[in-house]
Image (tube, rainbow, N blue to C red):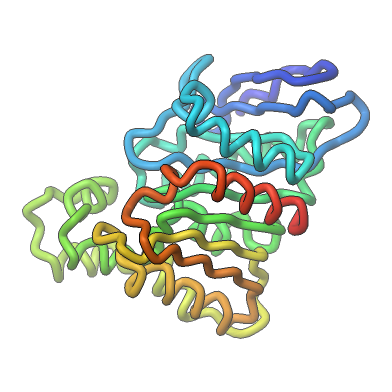
Length: 266
């Protein structure tokens, strides 16, 4: 694992490798050496990327605005990993996410005891498989948008079956039952629903469009909230009645919600 490059005072974006994947760390303008800051790890969605010196969430202003809101609210740094690209929370992406966390733990400018997670789409699956795996008990807060958490539903509802099962090494013509059986051990919803009360869980905010026909509220956002609450988690469920599969397109309202959530949760 490559160490995070030395940091200087102020805002900066540094790129490095952890777990064989390109990662970044972006510090706020208020950053000062010797004063470790909390960190929120962002998880990209479909076709998202982190490469040497670039990332879709750092290079696209409409996306960067959300990260700036989180940074301002949480008074934190932002980090991210390529995490194997279109991963749908598979084991390789979880290992890459864990390697990024370990690099942040070793960075003197970061207070990894105050870690948050953020993301949506397929990045949501990685958030929960990390929380249920190598990051168990290490995450204070998580915010998910277009909350993918139910891979069984993704397969059976057919909208994103092909890319989902491709991430698990299956051809797109694999029958549903066979695909479900293969993905079963890595399905966040099933794993969350099996948790016993008292499991270590982050405080969570869910942002989801009621009219989302791609990732339906009834099979993802609502059962996700219910599973977290059943295990004793603190959950804020935000379902927007007139929004489809485009929560990110809401702009300022979501920015303000993210800012307030991380300000309180970190």
